[in-house]
Length: 437
Image (cartoon, rainbow, N blue to C red; front, side, top):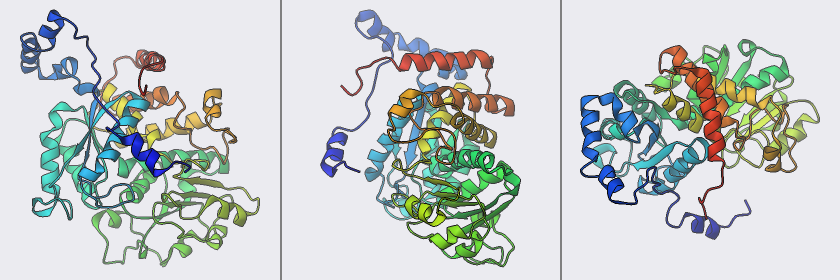
């Protein structure tokens, strides 16, 4: 990036989020309604009818971004306090892209022994997160190290009547599935016939495997730092064992031979050109390690020598960025609007499908203007939409809410009216504001 450290720190001065009032408070009457004595009427209404909390408070549009700071971005365990800029950033993305009010909830001293360092204390983190859930319509878990993150999400999901979503697990998976769906169209291959290799068996890799299998993938090999996750290994945790395979393969290089798709959520530079060349014709390489991918697009291009392929990374300076911002804001938008109790597999797959379908549509000029020099049209270099495509605000939440209603996780009385409401909301939020002035 051509941005200096000083510019970045200056941008963060004072934090990136604040409180905006949704009601006028300018005189005696509005003061009396906002607080005492008028507020007592809202309190009594909620006490008499608990479900009315979504009508009389901000709960229905508010998400807690919860972390213990054990796995901050690619930086590792730096503690809850150091995580706050990331949690603020998440809240900014929620608001800017999906008009969801989110607030950072970094929880310190949720480690073994109640300390602020060391591995996650799952019991403590679950207890503290559950205790604050009354105010929120959803919980977005963030930057919690594996394997504790799996149990934390599962237990909170079972305990709470609101969606619980660990973005590090599911965000990349939803966007990856969208890209793979479009690869299937370009390569004229069915999901069930794909031979897929995933390198990286942490939170993202496990859930990518889950999502691809949910969408119909039948042949998938998962690899970790020790090689292929095989059924005869004795060092596998519960999550890895679910995807262990009976085979003679041992290394990533062996697994990639004749594979259609490589998905990397691992480490920089771990894939070599000859391993890409050993893949099947018209392969897809999703090299998503950040900031440096498993293999650089320029290296793949040179190795392929003009033969067709799909290349994706996690970076914005290369085509096909697999960016979580395409997922979590809109998943929560749809889930909140449907008053969903969960974000289930059906809703996640629906989000992936909506993203894939949007990438096939003609790209608006305002999106093209933001990416000079790129050819934004459906094809190998454009299998997922760009984050600034305003149609995301309508298409993805609508698909999520529709799936929530169909699966019984939520309710939408009139889908056509809901789509119109999203379109009107999107039009209003694009009007000039004083934000950032």
